[in-house]
Image 1 (cartoon, rainbow, N blue to C red):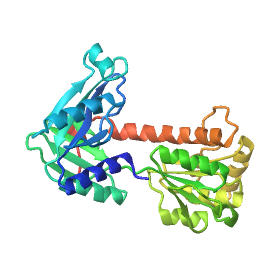
Image 2: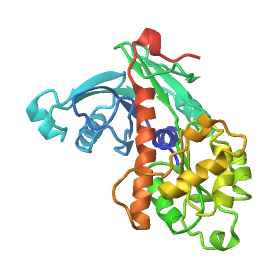
Image 3: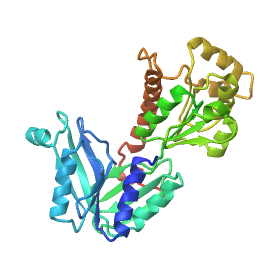
Length: 328
């Protein structure tokens, strides 16, 4: 499943290639309890089609009507929710206000450049000059941050979050379905033929080979989460030995506190440093009193999403343009 950024940009690019003018809308400032963070995208075609979101729906409707009525010829910024009446009108939370930048895409090259890099799992920084309306694209660095100073917009795009589930049992089905709805690309590894034969979740990729080999072949970057659910140490531990050495932002294992303690002892017998073993979230999940497979999956994904949200917030934290713009 595509990340939200990629889906919006791919759709906008398809419209542009079909000869349809497109306006790209970006959340550039928020105050109070705004529904979407800075950097969120909405693409609006001149014929009224749109994809993405900047709010709960009312602002999108207003923007689509406005763009359909008068397609912009240069970038501009408009605010919503400044007054209490307007906040109620547009369905913003109490005290929530936001500003969005509406940009007529002058040419598809900058969008195509973003799409090409994001498909290769590379983060990009797209910079828009407000005066000229021209946009440029560069690979993002660790210092790249969202920034907007009224003259230049820099937006970091393209994080494609992945969840790798080790074990293809009943719980894994719930995990996969929920994760797909939460904008993860989902991969499943299980060498046991009886489990592979029964896997039936569309959209989740079933990996070949043993878990350690499958993880190494897939690659585990800082946008990958890994959870083990097989209930078989030969399967789960094999995956964890590689996962804990990787850049994965989350590594968790299903099991009771007693099972988790035994697992840590086993892992300590291999070539893992104590700090690497300490990365393991086990038992995986937040405490919600879960008992059924669906509840356990919800608990586990809540912990994964919380970690992802913290990373996204750090990536999108506004910085002064001079210090935090795109670095090529």
